[in-house]
Amino acid sequence: MSAELAHGLAYWLRRLGGGVTGGISRLGFAARFLLAVLWYSPQAFRRIHLTLREIYFAGVLSLVIVLMSGMFVGMVLSLQGYETLKRYGSDEQLGILVALALVRELGPVIAGLLFASRAGSAITAEIGLMKTTEQLAAMEMMAVNPLARVVAPRFWGGVVSMPLLAALFSAFGIFGGYLVGVRLIGIDEGAFWGQMQAGVDFWPDVTNGIIKSVVFGFAVSLIAVFEGYDSKPTAEGVSTATTRTVVISSLAILALDFVMTAFMFRGGNV
Amino acid sequence: MGAPVNVHGGAAATIAGRSEPETPAVELVDVSFAYDVRPVLEGITMTIPRGKIVAIMGGSGCGKTTILRLIGGALKPRSGAVRVAGQSVPDLGAEALYHLRRRCGMLFQFGALFTDMSVFENIAFPLREHTDLPEELIRDLVLMKLHAVGLRGAAQLMPSELSGGMARRVALARAIALDPMLVMYDEPFAGLDPISLGVIGQLIRRLNDALGITSVVVTHDVYESLKIVDYLYFVSDGRIVASGTVADVRESMLPFVRQFVDGQPDGPVPFHYPAAPYREELFARVG
Image 1: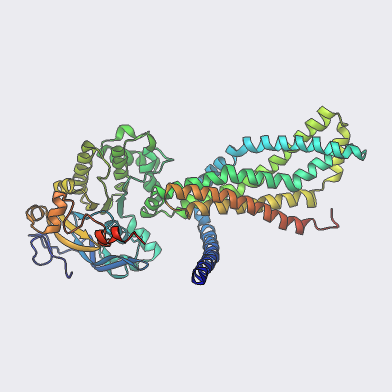
Image 2: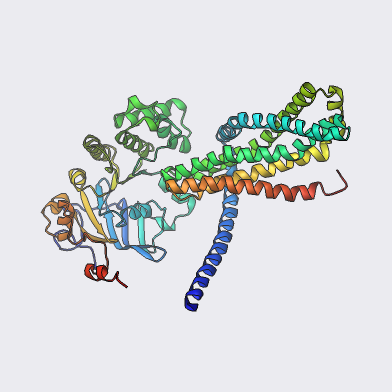
């Protein structure tokens, strides 16, 4: 019995050790992968139409879901915010509440999550399938580097698209908040916009939101291209990679958001 | 097993009546390769003369495709020499390797066409990547390559609209887009209907002769290969077990060659995967 126990223990220890070293080596591989992508980026930029095409696929095609979500989030914020603010008789502050919540947090974070599931998963699946069907190997044999031709344009397409999507998300959210707050509930329009203008600063509120969205764009795009490039060349491998992209991206966005918020808005400057 | 024997069991192989003053297109000398600890190839020596079609034959998983990957520089051998047009492939830097690859075409097993591009764009791809030719010239070149494989009318189709045989032909047109000196075929006959099979076979032969290419065909399709190739190598368990011309192979009495050519289920390549004795295993279950 004790031998069995020792055996089982050794098995789990081995698994734990294997998991840890595997994770670390994968992280190292991802870092080297990032360096390689950056190294080949100038080569990709020389033909900018490749990156523009990816901005279209990752950015423009994500517009519908991002704008609609932004609108609804803004509308809900307005409804909920009004309920709470009314208790303290400060319902004309609704404009600030909606704008700050969107610009600082919800814009970058929710746009990031939507971007990961809409565009990130598509990038992973596409690169993974190109690998499975030997398209990447064929490119390599034609003396064309897939990192420069396939990966770098998709990476930069994501990096450029994400902050723009987050900004549009916030803008449409504020518009949704306006529709519900002013048009539906009947808050004074002048107070809504006036308070917002007075209470939201370009620095730090808007800029910090932009910084967040750039970081999220970088993280999600890297995870998406890496998972695709590193996927096992089977149907199952591609599906696993796509799932991993969404899961890891979402967790990365939320964790990075916490860390950045802690640094950006720590007491005093609110 | 020592040096490769030809199908008559005699000395190693050169194609009869041909002396080669120039360097052969591809030369492998005593090449060994292993994935981690699992040996895949051992002591492979083969010469592929210019202008010829050479088939590398063997069962699935015997290491045939690995030989192509070694020739293309995607893998490095553990020991031995791999030379393409006199250049040692494993010693080439990234730049030189890419330079060499521009002179080689490769047809992948299922074509590996770029699914987001039309047939036309697929064939234009290597031209656009490696040349600064004006658009009209690219158009003409692409149409010429497509015409050579009989698919000029399919230029505007997407890969998803092609049948398996057509996709293979488009991939062949793409492989010869840059007028390579060497074309490698990875299982060009796999999964094709009899007509497409014949078409691909004839295309390989015709393009080889018309364009002065050298062709390496990795396949397990004996019947089609014997119709088009000049020379064959038989690979089993990572070693060359026989080699010879088509006539040699047809007459050969070597058990492996006979099993392969006649498609017998059992022989030097056993029907059963290695296992414990049947009786032992059946009775061992109790307890």
